[in-house]
Every structure is written in structure tokens, then in C-alpha cells.
Image 1: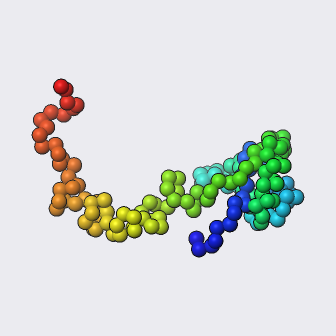
Image 2: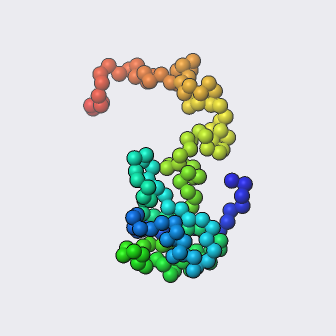
Length: 155
């Protein structure tokens, strides 16, 4: 993550025919717009899936203007009988971003310990077990002492 952030040069292409379109196909289609640095056709995560991609892909260009040119020329065009949609890729890849949808646990994300107290579980005692029996914070029965019947209060 020490690499300086580059302007967005990656485009997202959806509506691709999974049986016909390959990385070579995307390279041939988008090379007229500029130097391509990488092409990605994500595959399904299921282990029993075939070698087919998921019907969308990413093409990263060397220059932002090349990416914009590819979008303006190729969005809503036809490729192997299917209309494709081409737009700027949004943000970071799923594997790299933090938060919902991330593949990294919240407590392993950068800066979590500083924001929430290093080595502290939700109980605040630092043992990481999440329960603080000494102070009674983890007791699920706490606050129920005055209740004699289960269910909602009826006025």
C-alpha cells in the first residue's frame, strides 16, 4: 500500500459472453485505445465451477485518457452478439478494500487496534475473550432481576 495512488485507469466491462470472450479477445478489442497494463476476467469462487469467467472483466490502461476513450467508444457496443457495458471501475478490488464485503477480518484491518484499543476484546479487559465476568459486563442475565414473567410489558 506504499505505492502512490494512480488516477483510475481501469475500466469495467460487463455483458461478456462467457463461452467466447477471453483475455486475448479483450486485448484485441481494447488495444486500439492505448497501452494495456493488465486484463482480468474473474472466475466463479465455487470449486466445482468450470473454467468459464463470470461475464465481466477489467482492463487496466497505462493512461487515464486511454481508459476514457475506450469507454466513450465501446460502451453499448456489440461484442459476439451481446451488448456490452463499459465504465470506469469503481474503487479498489474486493480483496483489497476494508469493510463489508472484504475478505479480511475487521480486527485484522489496518488501524483497527488504534481505533478500538490494542489487545482489547469487547469486554475491555484485554484478555480478548469478549467477556468481563469480574465487572459483570458479559452476564446475559444482568438487568433482568426485576422481571418475573417473560414477554413484552403490558400496560
